[in-house]
Length: 115
Image 1 (cartoon, rainbow, N blue to C red):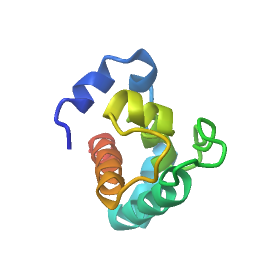
Image 2 (image 1 turned 90 degrees about the vertical axis):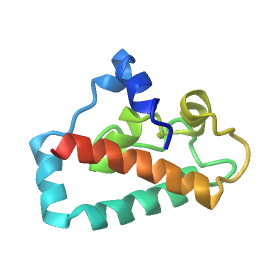
Image 3 (image 1 turned 180 degrees about the vertical axis):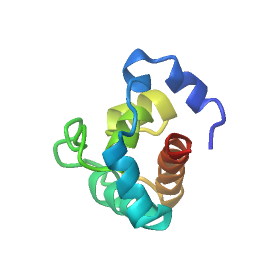
Image 4 (image 1 turned 60 degrees about the vertical axis):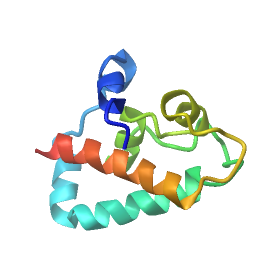
């Protein structure tokens, strides 16, 4: 994981405004981090990994699941943000390694929020 990504994201007014609220924190406590990771893996594989994701730029809701909030906070919400913030080009399917990187970034952000 790029160590400086969280420093860079913290300097963005838009990205740094995202926080998990009590509802999402309770959901994490109930489900556990392993389940949240599986949800993240599934969301990334289905919504972000295709070369041309359906509704790219609008595929990630702003609320409703801790992973969705984390995706916006970490700029892993669409292929444009992935390219701009993480250097992962659009227009091709994400590799298994890229998907794992994205999930790790999301889970680290969630872990930091849940402390």
